Amino acid sequence: MKLPWNSSSKNLIQLFQATEKPTVNQMVSLISEFFGKAVSGEVRQMGIDSRDHELLLYRETMTELAALLRNQYHLWENWTRKEVDRRIPDIVTATDWKLRIPGYRYSREETGTLGKQGMAIIRALPESLSVCLKDRKETVRKTLVRKYATKTEDAQAVSERTLRCVITLKRHQGWGKNTIFTWSKDRELNLKYTLVETYLYEQLALYSFVFKEDNRAVFMEDIRYKLKQYLINKLSSHHQRAEIAEEIIQEILISFFDKKAGYAAHPEKFYVDTRLHTYFIKLIKDSRKLRKYQGEVDDNTEDLPFDEQFFSRQGHEVSASEIMEILHQCRLLLDDSCREFFELRYSENFAEPLNYEAMADILDQTPKKVEKLAGKCNETLKTSIIEKSIEKGIVLKKSWTTTKKKDLSAPQEPEN
Image (tube, rainbow, N blue to C red; front, side, top):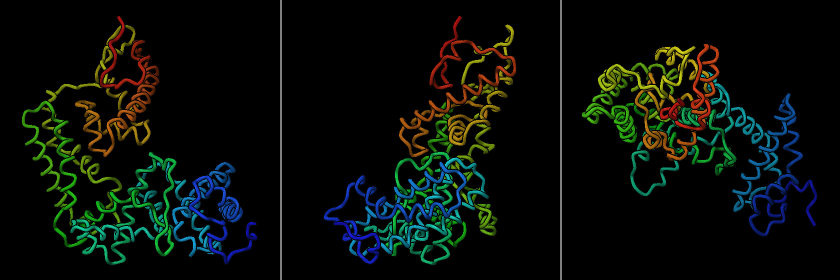
């Protein structure tokens, strides 16, 4: 016989009459029975206008709560129903925050707002910095944590910068089906360590260099290889590409180091809301030296991601500049993930495309995932190109308009 509803002083072993760790489905059923009413009440108090969003928030909260408690099974003897009830408002608020991130349009201001809201909810995030102190060997990140993240204000600052990176990533990638929250030893909410680990120590290394007295840019040790690989691929036709890559990287670093004092003077204005190699690749793209060497490689010609022969207007050829204008207009209409894909794959004039292996290395993804993203983005761009061409009275050959999921850098041959 199950214990009565108001058995708030019983621990969770007694409440759930558990003899072993429940399965995921069993856990969801138990949460629904014992905490569904409390969660539903908290969701309604959020004052959400949309019934669909209210239902989504309820389901997501129940899923997160079920995962949180199931992962705490070894501590159920110390958890009472009353203690779980007391934490439900925070879990509902945190889940609502989670649901607002995918799809928002990036801006520093909005990202900052979501970051501060997240820090107020996910109070245990600074504790994640101490995880590396358990490393058996003396590591760079272990040294940085001891030296620069022992003070509360520093740990908070690094954690907020880390959270901004996670928010920026998930705005277009989404959270997927996995739950994202965990509890600290003090039963405060935190993000799962796997979500923040990479960003956490990159941001700590950057923070210690820019805002503290550490003159070693230790973060460059990890990203220098990726920057060099990016440049070698961009300059693949140049016989001295490795030497040129080192020269460009050195120039970018000197420029960044020269600006350090300005960044340090205004910490509220300097944020890197992405992986550090992505940030520096963007600086490299703006490098005059890179454009100079690309000019030598390209010999002032434009390598379009499709052939001009696919375009015509009443029997007349369409100029490359006109095609390029269409391309740039269409790229602006893409979502963030596809726009970033094309920015990385092609240079500003759509020349010298990176191969998927190089992109996968830079993005820390598998080539298969990059290829899947390419298929989606190529189709989206092609649809936009077709629509924009029709607006301008430009005719596309049938073979191009019917090509499915081909890389735009290698279209099919046009029909005669």
